[in-house]
Amino acid sequence: MKVFLTGGSGYIGQATISALVKHGHTVEALARNDRAAEIVSSVGATPVRGGLGDLGVLNAAAARAEAVVHLAQAETGDEDLAAATAMQDGIGTGTYVHTGGTWVYGDTNGVVDETAPWNPPGLVAWRKPVEDAVLARAEQGGRPVVVQPGLLYGGENRLIDIFYTAPGKEAGVIPFIGDGANRWALVHIEDIAELYVAALKAKAGSVYAGVGGVNPTAKDVSLAVAKSVGLEGKVASITLDQAYEQMGAVADAFVLDQQLTPARAEAELGWKPKYTDPLGVLARGE
Image (cartoon, rainbow, N blue to C red; front, side, top):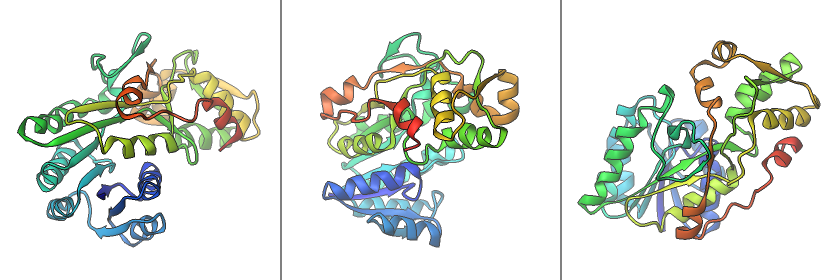
């Protein structure tokens, strides 16, 4: 299948391109500059020069493809919806896979699935009208699918590295917020990449939580991270106010208590997370 992908030079994007190529798909990937073009080429995609605001480029690339995977992070909801609209117009009846996120569910009060009500922190509240508009295209003959990744780990760990590992190494202690008893819905980067591949065959209007099904506490994650950087046992609680000062608005997401199940994707797509020991992976720094 010919797939057009945005965000290909990023953390999820590189893994997803590699997974698509492994499964026999050909990939064109948006590249905003020379460095991005080099990265997407190195993992097997053909670069398409342009940015998320280049709606004509997005539309034309989508029209050449049989499916679209939108991974790029927009600055605003308006930008994300404009890009999504251009690509959905281009792909027509082909599959359009849009990226959301599990943080939109807020505190879950136990294990939930994609039918849970939304209660997003301000950081991701903009996603609701965008995803509603994307999914509404199913009523017009489109084939929209939404994948909602949990908090990613594996390889770079992206957000965990930025807000926990790097500052913790500098300070000599890895932080956690409050008592750290809140749970995180983690997913390994290789597993989420496989879910994007599996989502190409999903029914129109489908929504999938991309989670590993293992939801460790934030404190246990910090302990694992501490071990990976030679600071075993050296973790410390910070207040939410301190977290705002150190992390900004993303602190509202890190303090969420979330447990989600991957059961729907397992049942409908045959996707099953391979990584079921996130703390072990994090502790090894893999």
